[in-house]
Length: 217
Image (tube, rainbow, N blue to C red; front, side, top):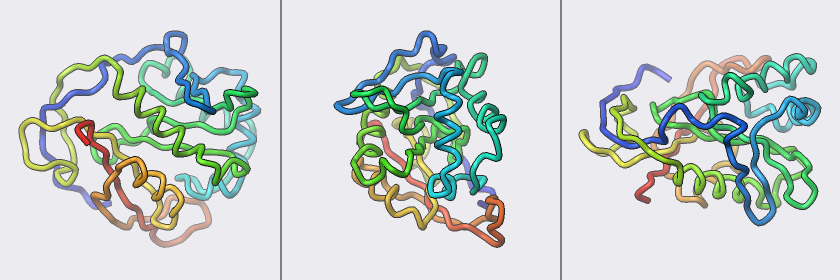
């Protein structure tokens, strides 16, 4: 994306540093438990991140080459990085099976917190993505907050000055399933653009769509 026009706004976000993994409480929904990462999740993360159907919509576009690559991915969300991130392991409440990951991504394309998720392909089309995102956002909105000044993409807000808190998401324009999930939960499209495709083996550009959801929605 070409350099976007930005503005500074006053808003509220969860107070940082965020809780450590030992302090973060599991998030529970009807069928899911979202909990912090643990070293013992390596094998499940490796399985998830070697499914081509899952990884095609990631920045790398391919499965992890080995468990060391999966371990490096997990390090983003394990101590000491846990207080700077808010991402979870998604498990079935009935069995504890790990079926995916989700929460804040390492990106903040629009200057606001950005959410994303990955689910094992065998759990697609069963409503788990919607259930995860609804549960995670409900928890996110409930965290203690502080006022701050934030530099954000001008297209993400209406005007300057005070701005309601926003969460964003960015998807591949071809990812229609994720678009439906976002729209079902009230996200609105705010920008479309093309940029050089970062995925290995994908020459040319990729088309992306940005969405936002306001706390006041």
